[in-house]
Length: 484
Image (cartoon, rainbow, N blue to C red; front, side):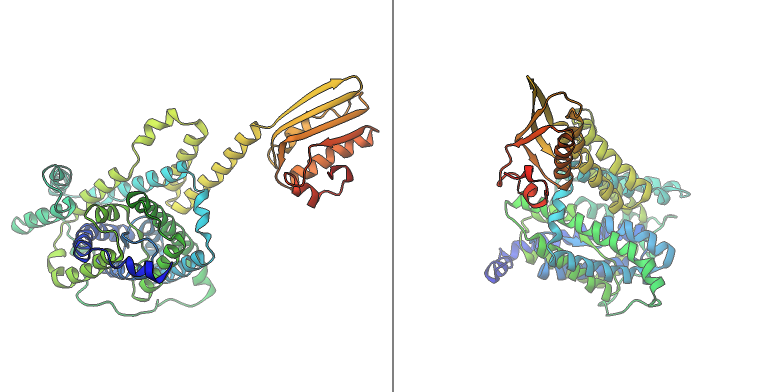
């Protein structure tokens, strides 16, 4: 990215950018706090982290107009580590995850995202929605009726208010109204203060207080890999949404490295790793934020609100956050994917369902995506394998095999099985003008066919091999007949 282009990304309409960023902050607060209790950390930790991420990625990221924070799938991954080993291990995992993301961007590995098919992305989103909803269930067990009433009231506000006005995000209105109700009419419900202390000042540099041993690394490394993977996946998916909405192109390599730098800073300031947030990003775009200033404002204004208004934030009832997270889970789930199950190819639908099942069973979004990508590759190979066609024509004492399609590791045996090695013909021609050989397995199979036929004294010729189409054969084959 050129300096001129980078500077221009800060120079969009300043007033519009600042106002959009402030709206993004209001939309950020409830979800970050809600995800903090999912991850098992204090709201202060998540809010500090969101401040650092937003400010840092506004400077180092590659996709202007995108809001990032300490929420989303990364919080779900970190939850298991926090619950089993404590927040200090999470800080080390955050540092390692950030370093991995920097390396990911430097090595331009963002191109691997192209291998994540649409059905895997849909499964990822659906599984995330299910996990978000399931995380709310404990907050709705063993509580008084007041909690259920507040949750219901919160959902009514969230869904009905936008029909009247969307000037202020309805989740924020939900928090304000439900907090006012519980302050004016005290009732036995849990509040944010029950989760831990909120920030009252600026964050400070710190290092994880953990034993610096290989045993610690063994505990943290799997979680760090998962946090880095799902953070990158969600951020790059969110960046794609911004690309589509603004008809512009971000820099995914810079976004990957920028997210890594942001998460390293987060770890040094005692926070939890974060990633792009789709809902807040869409809201930012809706109110005109397309540059880096809106992202910066979202973080800076967040810290201002927390330091000045933390006394009021502490009194927010948990029921309000549950209502918000239920809304998030409902809006995150791809409901059209249910209708598409019967319309889409069965293998594509199966890939989506397996991705969801693995994520829900393991609570590991990275594992679900990995399995989904693997299945996509297997099913794609299966489809391409089915396109290979071998026709046999016999004329007198000569056999002609016409090969059409793609020959590779999955389809090579199809070619092998189509050859009659017991043929009485003394001449065999194999025409591969309409075929393409892709790997060593395909080359070795062709060599094997020629060798077996020759061993029986048959005169074999391979027609249609050209340097342009079959360079791999020339490079790998030791059989003279396979040359042009």
